[in-house]
Length: 442
Image (tube, rainbow, N blue to C red; front, side, top):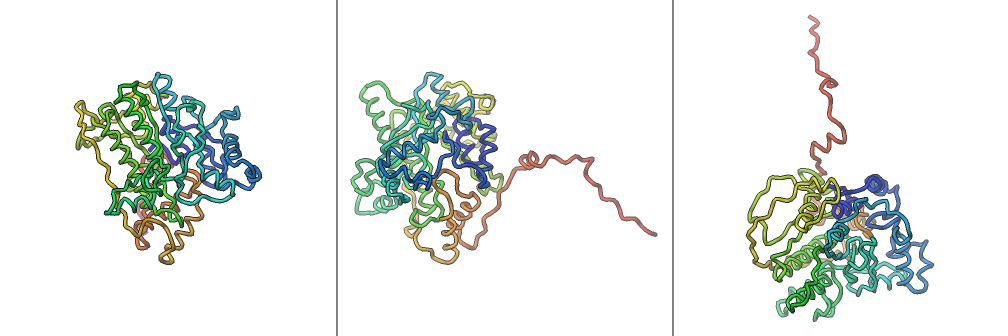
């Protein structure tokens, strides 16, 4: 990964570049000395779930209007201000527009307000899990995303499912029925009839397929950007799913997305790229910047092991080359594209598999022991309102404990020697003291 955390990670993942302001300012924030959320198009965004004491008077009347006003007040372009976190070379969607390509955004640099958001704001309380209520307003965080976004695809909100809730997962496991685990509009199960990120994207995608198969003009955008955030998890926060379930929720959304595209008329012309915006100091035995990225298409080389260095910008360069988009800056212009494709496609469709999770490990309820109680207490102290506002070391420890138990110590963060050299410098051989032999008094 080119990034350290979400503040610079969303820039690297969509613009192949961060900015000097972001690189400096987010470190102040991570040390609890900085401003509130100042990234992804926002300027000093407060926690509005529930609204802060400073804003609370505004929610006495029309909560939707007040919440919309609060959010727009913290969007620089809506106030005529410059967004210091914005790279001068802008973003992938701007590059697509310059190339004359259509594009659509699902939850990235977008703020979506749900019915439950409005109810919680009006009652000045926190939301409960899950929020599968209808989206009532979508606000683009960048002017170039106006009229290019899904109005119902939820942005970062850990109460909203990527694909499924715990109840829907349980229903899908029932051998007496044929329930769909995904929360979708029109799901026969009333508890699963609602809004999930997968469900809203599927509804649009199926509409694209139907229009193309009917011989109408193809409405499918040349480039779509989706945000599926629930593998952030909420640690062991009481009343929320376990980390294992939230990661499974995220995985199943990915699987169903690939299943839908690979089973459609678009498969022979499609490529799907998935990347984390940052590794968030994950314990990795090579380097804490290393993370998983997925490139999925009918043209992938089967079983190939590629010995080339690839990073976030390599993926962006690959996307640009496939779409015929000019590089945005010197970094993606010089990046090595991903060497994973072949000329002959394998059009076999993918079938998503419902994840297997232990029945007693779906929701975080009462603590099982003293150690669990301590980690649950630490989870309650974390800020999950915005991406990566929880303390990364603490959250990683919580997740490690939830998976491995109390008898396993989480490994520390590793760094490549090159990073250490950049941070500490390289010792000059002339400055290195050479041990001398002890003097022989005889």
